[in-house]
Length: 158
Image (cartoon, rainbow, N blue to C red):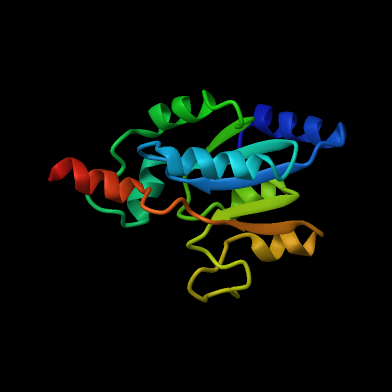
């Protein structure tokens, strides 16, 4: 996170605004993403999105062709969405350090995660223990059925 990004988040917090954080690849933007991001924004005043860098996407083993779009393009598209207040690219495999820096009031993930899972369990939400430890909330938003980047890629190939 840059000093400018940190200063902006600190200013929002000083103004009494609640910070919502989510993260993802957002490789090929679709209705599922927009529905999810809109629901996330409704949980607070400012929505901060952690965006996996290209190297980070490759660490996630989403396939040799991913990401389809490079991080700078994905960031530009996300920044054009009205409900998003900040997009921060991160290089690590998980956004754990970024969550520590942002200190969100609400941590949001999609329905394929489990808000009650513990460290090491399937569906565990990275950063959930830290957010809860500071009195914050962890919210899982249901996914829009049938909408995924993987499905779009498969459909385009057939």
